[in-house]
Length: 503
Ligand code: NAD
Image 1 (tube, rainbow, N blue to C red):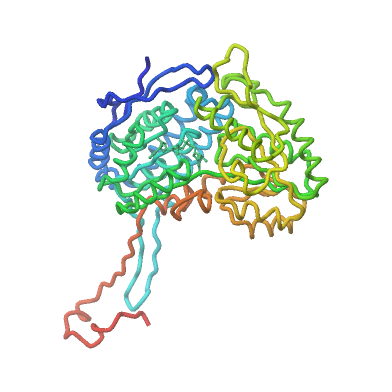
Image 2 (cartoon, protein in one colour; image 1 turned 90 degrees about the vertical axis):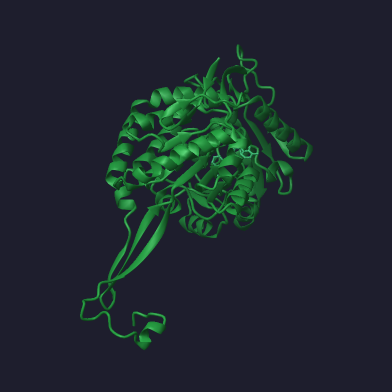
């Protein structure tokens, strides 16, 4: 059986814990590999390797660090097919979607290639008599990233490409459900010229996460995953003196206005609700229709669109989406569907019990659609993370906007309308971090920044873009004066006892 090791100090390292987690093929339900789970001591080895690499890497000029990332970008492009196939076989998303996952990662690497410009400080000449003030952004030291199963290429790249571009050294702890692509990313970065110890990878579970959260040498930690764990990571990491950003779950709402282009909105939402089997934090699992007529038309058209979807294996080039990641996740999604029925929502399309001939043990779920979902239902208040669309009927725009604004999650939201004034007002008022206007999945481009609000993110600095550079660096501000010999060395005047002003 294939075993997935750690990667420490420039080499694959076989774990010694004797603990493993099985990696399934979601298309068949078979175990295809197993991943080693690290002990606290193995995490400490990775930290020691990153510590040893830090002095030289942080002293490497930013242009040279960027060159490693330029090489890495080219290698990712050369290997995109291999990475996408590997990703699909462990995650279950279709290959074209996996390519998008890798491409989104490449986009952030491309952003990080601009680090010589991005990390520049500021300078004020003559802030006082003969006094200049300047600032510099210095790397933090050893930093870490903990990533979820659903974007095993993009999210590691969000974190480590910006962090190491800034001069930090890094430990990646990917999801134990699909760790092969993260390991390939680390190998490719070394092929691109990263010195050993700059990027290390530890496979593991809570034991490794806790070891990173409490290790005194880890200065900052970025986490993406479910909200309860994000909150735990934020609380524990900050209590141990670390800078932490922890992104959590989501329940994104799309508002369907009566004046929208309904055909286009349905096309957009069918992909945003069911694509990747709904396993995206920027999926659109709630549609809020405004007005009875809009709601009726939307539900009717959406049912047709959902029924036309092809669910296939992740390697089927014609499939719209593949299986969910695990048997446990399939059971969880199906429980939420039953919960919705028990809570009184109207199940118009039931994706449970979906089987694929020849793949009877795969983790497939057909598309489900609920109408007349109401706030307060647990199946609405919680994240399902599966191919389930919930429709809520609202009478007015104000009522519709209150729904995403009052929800516990605040990752993304979208409005579908042809009225610019309404869209503008919605964007300004809604209590959510990322907004789409006739864009169903408003994941910002790499040179802007990604992050939700409320229980979708703990900590106040987002991923990538200039915010990412801020997160992975600390600012130092220098005030300098070079008095001439004639000016210096006299008696201590009264002025020395007064807080200096530049007046
Ligand atoms: P998860 O929370 O189960 O796991 C995330 C990471 O935490 C993994 O590396 C895992 O090994 C680790 N982990 C698991 N249990 C832990 C524990 N008890 N203590 C410490 N660490 C633990 O999440 P997942 O199922 O892999 O990913 C799906 C979730 O991630 C969804 O909730 C989704 O919305 C969210 N997500 C959020 C964003 C975002 O940017 N907001 C992006 C992608 C995914």
